[in-house]
Length: 176
Picture 1 (cartoon, one colour):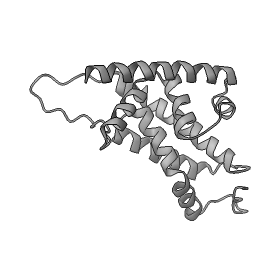
Picture 2 (tube, rainbow, N blue to C red):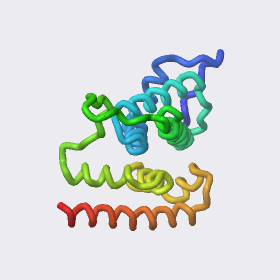
Picture 3 (cartoon, rainbow, N blue to C red):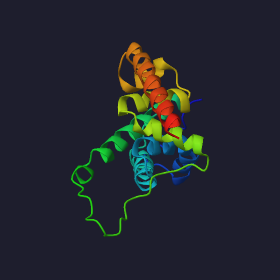
Picture 4 (tube, one colour):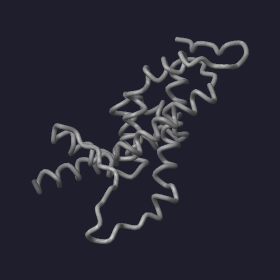
């Protein structure tokens, strides 16, 4: 499917962006949540990704290109939020003061919660390929192109990520 061309004056309509948000909101929010671990940060990343899309109106040759642009932008913004100077310089509150830190995302089903915690605990390189492969159903070759790495690198990260997940989930279940 070919992306809808921009209006001839180069401007975009709110309807175009709204359609794109509706089509890709679940995918983008899932990546945001997986990479930030909490709703407030995921909400910020989500909003910034689609605001950037609306402002830049990237020329996409097809839907796969648009999807790749959104994934790459989401990963970049999430990485920026995770490594921001504010996050790296946060000092814990003294004992006795009320903690108003963002709540960690939780699923209503404990098994999903365990899997989510295990995936978000992975180092970013493994978390990214695991999420794109299993949750976005992207093939290893497409993930490699998106991340600008070799397909063999993606396959190795998938293997190592699976091993880490298995260890984390087995360890968590034996302590339960």
